[in-house]
Image (cartoon, rainbow, N blue to C red; front, side, top):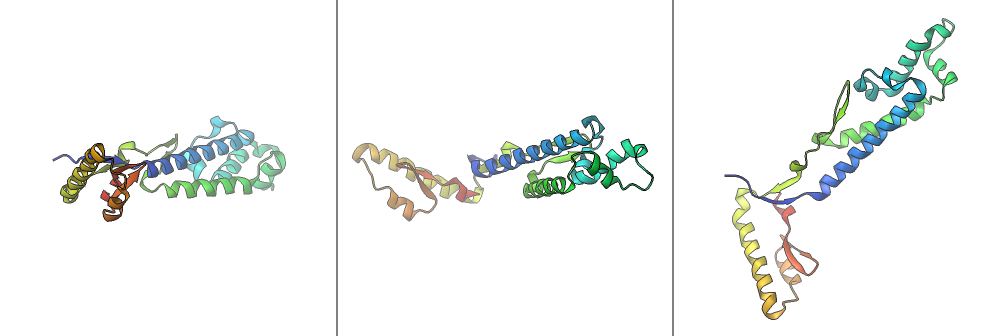
Length: 184
């Protein structure tokens, strides 16, 4: 028997979409920094770049420009003295990016050599009615329908008492609704 969809978890979906947008912003910020150090077409492995962006950029810069420096020059010194590269700034962005990615749990993006792909599936936030609670949900639904019908006859206005008596109900404006988050 197919499960009955009774709602959608807008709140959690919204949080994860905001996090994913923040991840995209951090990635774009790191790309802009990389443009000042090396051209974007030199990022041949986004996974390596996003795991350790500062080290990746230092290595790429050094590979491109090693011949212009004396033999004992440190790669990090070469890049900081000849570009506006700031390792601490890149590491800070990288730390925030990694924390955001980890906070996404099962929905964190897939990062590979070519870039990253979203793993947020909207259908994963659907709320389905568990079979064990089907009878209770139907009874609540019948109660809500009865309340709506009674409102037509005598203008029932104190429905808040029902919400107090049945914690699986909630008020939405002046209407009583089933709190579908209680059925997760």
